[in-house]
Length: 100
Image 1 (cartoon, rainbow, N blue to C red):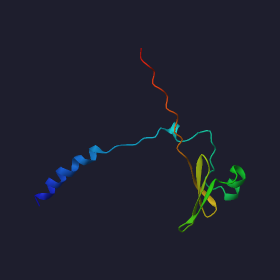
Image 2 (cartoon, rainbow, N blue to C red):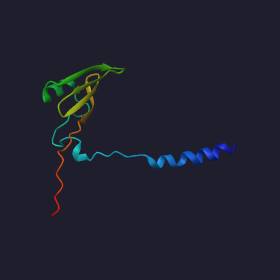
Image 3 (tube, helix red, strand yellow):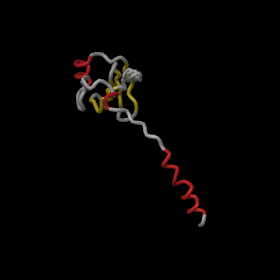
């Protein structure tokens, strides 16, 4: 029984050492790029955005399919959009101002 408080005291500080990765919204792809909306059919996406750069085969049950375009990916369940995700687009680094 005396081991549990000691174990807790040793493990408790470990949570304070975690890192957090944050990607600013402005770096998650061009906000001006329209995305397919949830519920749209594959046919509507095909007519609106053209052929995908890559079409991944369906996986699982219900079948989930992914179409990759240059700036975003579209996820389908059967033949309807369930989500659209912009690809990360890193911005060019801006040079620091030189100090005199």
